[in-house]
Image 1 (cartoon, rainbow, N blue to C red):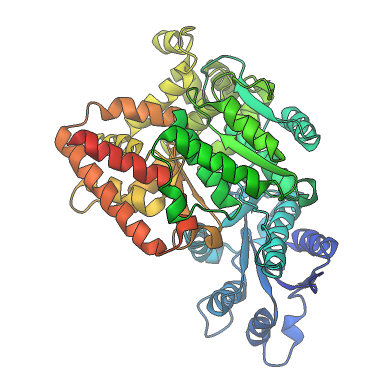
Image 2: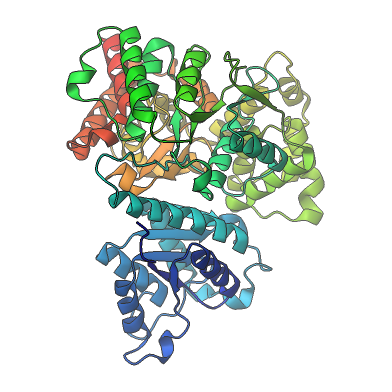
Amino acid sequence: MALPPLRVFLSSSVYGLQPFRAMVEETLLSLQQLPVGMEHFYAQPGGAIAFSTESVAECDIYVGIIAWRYGTIKPGETRSITHLEYDEAVALGKPRYLYLANESTRQDLALFPTETRDPEHETKLLDWRTFLQQNEVVSYFDSAAELGRQVSIGISRELQKRFAVNQPSSAVVPPLVLPPQTPDFVGRETELKRLYDRLSQGHSVSLSAVVVGMGGIGKSTLAAEVLHRFAEAPQTFPGGIAFVGCDQKTGMEGLATIYEQILTLWQRPLSADEATRASTPEQSAELRETLLRSHLARVGKSLLLLDNVEHELPLDRLVTTLMGVGMTVVVTSRYVPTSPRLQVERLDVLAPEAARALFRDRYTERGGHWLAERDAVATLEVVAHLGHLPLAIELAAARGALRPLSPNDLAQELREPGVLAKLQDASDPTASVRYALEQSLATLSEGERQQFAALNLLRGADAPRIVAQAVLAAVGGPGSDGSVVLDRLAAFSLVEVFAVDREASGPYPQRMRFHPLLRELAQERWQAVPEATKSISLEALLTALADVVGGYGQDIIREVREESLIADAIRQAAQQR
């Protein structure tokens, strides 16, 4: 049965955002939902604040757009009208979708002219943006079209949730669980279109590097982007769209774990009785395969990303099982896949102009000031020395912006004979990433370098932010603030902090993940850390995980997400004893 249209409250500073608001309204109408604007609030009896907060209460969903203007603060208030509307949505428990102008647009006076900004309120604006990034699931935009696309994904997801509530309890609710999306997707439009077309036709695809073993080339970024594009057109995969992180999952045990995560995504977690039926990893995998075949056979065409598949995982068996129940699969791996059922898409490094654009975007996002007439040529030299490899470029751009170093400074550093010899080592396909990482770590204190290395203990695909913070604080010693250290590591692109849907994550929407190659390099550094520090770190990890599990209560579905993290922590503790 069709649901009645939802009233969607559109909150933003009107001044300077008219084209963006118009795009959102057009998007909402195309989804057959009702946008509620703020343009006439000032003419209402009782004042703008009272009328706008009342309108929030009358709507079903709150959509907030925050760029580079904080907005009007009425006499007697300390917050802008836009901020108060958000507060009202929080107080009323409204579903909230937040869209922030990307940091790279902060200096873009063509997109957000000076006259549309309010520098006298800049501190309030930046504090609010930071609060939203830490406490909400936010999406980013750098154009009206991108904002419309992001709103389409968010509202479509909300409609899917509400539709599921009205289904019979026996129905399988299609999941829409997307990996973190990289803001300012750069340089892979041709590959993105080719991948989108192949998957649309039902072909399962593996993304791997042209050079075997090369990491940091952007496979996961491309795969995440294509899943987000399909989320805009959910009718392509009506059975659901989801992803599973396969980091460090190997052999039959890893296969069984992946199967269990897939079952949980499609609302079929194992019961306690089922979990005890198998006594060996092989039996565990077989049991879960049987459940998958019986449960997923009726869900319809679906799409699953298997991200960062390890070489030792029985991939052909996994893909055969999933394709047998109607799933289209996209796999990312540093190695050529072993399954003949997968079409292979070999990714090369970025083209020079795309590599320069990536450096520019990441440099400006971290506060660097980049001018084309001054920095374009030097940036081309920097990215060429780094082999046009995306991860190495992101690390170098972040370091350059934060130290700070200009693109010319970086170019001079990279052309030094000793540095060039390292970067041109043909025997090491990870040479540029390794060099960029070492330079970033050299900027940190010795204590921070140990803290970075300690994060290798978090062996799942990702982990709750509070767990990472606990480990960092333990390594740092008394008075160490794990949250501050984690944000500093993220600023240098050494780790990624991201948010997931609160409904899917429960009390822990903020999560952290490593790029697999950076995790490997952290593991190398961890070997030199004193044993006493290792013991303290592992104890902090186990304590934090126990707290997280306690926070989930009896919510088995959410707890399964941490299964690999918990199992590896217990295994490490046993090995240490």
